[in-house]
Image 1 (cartoon, rainbow, N blue to C red):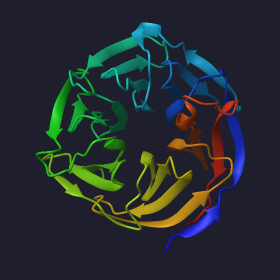
Image 2 (cartoon, one colour):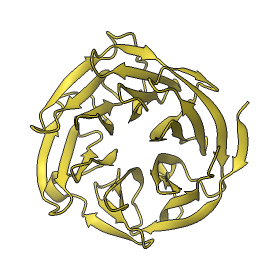
Image 3 (cartoon, rainbow, N blue to C red):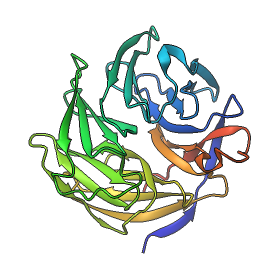
Image 4 (cartoon, rainbow, N blue to C red):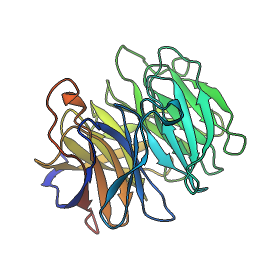
Length: 291
């Protein structure tokens, strides 16, 4: 059984606005700044090392009305998944200029999260369409790379593929399936799909993922916890060894590793039609030196 421990909250960022409903987070490896997107209106926020949060791009800019996944690549580009709009936005961080607006052409669609391959290509999940998308890192051209249903992935109603990361060895991407709590890997060279054998799973309501070395962090939104697992080099197997809990969690949908901290997005998506607790926050948790 995984060990259950109380998360040590080292600090938090307060996001400006009364209806932010942040969904994802990505860290710029060059600066340590983190970027968060609003599912409610498409705003983008920058979180600095000084503990400040500021609007980086106002909602509605470039027609961006909703943002799910947010990631920053090694070339200094910010990628923002457009959620139900079926879009993907790519920005130059230095100039804040729009480099590409990509349309998946899928309906229904929920473009959800992004991971980068070893050659700079982006792999993108869609929670409603059984396709893993791929974007060429140079031409920024999108294609429907893998038919997941044809690859043997069951695709029931609800939210399916969600968070995605590159496996430790760099040869596969690993994605979680929210409604079933199952994890799948896809080989980058062949597109072959296979299920990850996860000791301690399934993790129903799994959402955003973050990987540091061979340690996989999983935001489990409706259960208000973070699962910590070890993941094999090829992503074929994993073991959940720790469950992080905290009264400070508020429907966490995304995690990111920044230095010795784990950043946790308190989305409060369960309160979109209710009364969210203000301000909206991103928590910074202390990561133990060893798990």
